[in-house]
Structure formats: C-alpha cells, structure tokens
Amino acid sequence: MATTVAPSDAAHPHGTTRRDFLFLATGAGAVVGAAALAWPFVASMAPDADTIAAGAPIDVDLTPIADGQIVNVFWRGKLIFVRHLTEKEVADMKAVAPASLIDPAPFLGRVKEGHERWLVAYGNCTHLGCVPIANANGLEGWACPCHGSQFDAVGRVTRGPAPINLPIPPYAFQGDTKVRIGEGATA
Image (cartoon, rainbow, N blue to C red; front, side, top):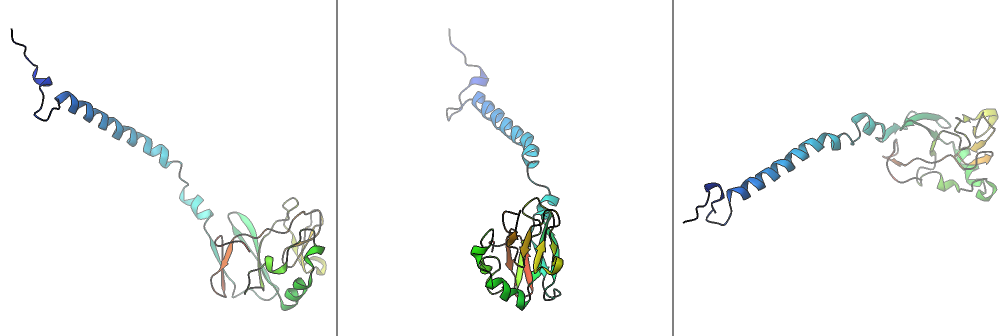
C-alpha cells in the first residue's frame, strides 16, 4: 500500500510547508496586534503639551529694568527675582567678606561674569518658603516677614534662621538686554 501525503503538508520545493507559513504569519500578526494594543499605554506616559510648556525656558527683557529695580517672574511655577544692581550695591557686595556670612559665597559666585549688575535668584526664603520683601527698612536686599531672615542684594543670607542663600536657577544671557531663565549652567 502506498503512503499518501496530505496536500496541506506537502513540502514546498524549498523545504517549507504550508504549516510553517501559517505559523509565521500568525506569530507576525500577534506581534503587530500586541504593539498596536500597547501603543496607547506607552504614549500616555509622555508629558502633555502643557507640562512641557511649563518647564520651557523663559526670556526676560532687561531693557526696561531700571538701576536698583527688582522684577518678579515665574518659571516652572516658582518665583524668580531679577535684580538690576546699582553701582553702589555692586561695590558694597564685593566688599563683604564671604567668611562673615551664614552660607559663605563670593560675590562673583552669585552673578555671571561680565554681567555683574544682574542677579537672578529664586524668590522664596530658604527657611520655610515665605517671599522676602525687597529693601525693607532701608535694607540693601530682602527681609523675610515670617521669621526675620535677611538676605543681601545678591541673595546671600546675612541673618537667620534661613540656613542657606537664595538659590540661583539655571540661566544664560542672550546678549546684554535679554536673559533666558531655565537654560545654561547655574551661576
């Protein structure tokens, strides 16, 4: 008696069978289906446009800011002070011995070289987060109304309980009349 081979199992001239083809086609379809099913879940993990925009750098035009003036801006939901130091404030701040401060920092460690008349600093007290008041009681700097901390004109803490200076956000000058906050190395 002769053995017959079913047509579905008949070998192709290259050694593959219809069963091999169906197995590969089913596997490929399953992979494509799983990827299509997973795509919305993976895409939902990416931040939305509002979140991306909230962390984007901001540009501040320095042209209208007068000597001694402080402008408040917000970046990433945090208050930022942009202060145009007067010649007197620069001279006074350079004369302060860093060792005499609670959190020692030299003047040039708080401002960018070549732009010494501009301070860019976060605007919350480093004690409990209150907003310090500028030039209160003739102070050349800020005074915290909550617990009495004082900061000089470049944000260095001169009187506690604040333990550290006002932090410096990342920023970079885009020429002499514009600063971009949120980009560049910290000062």
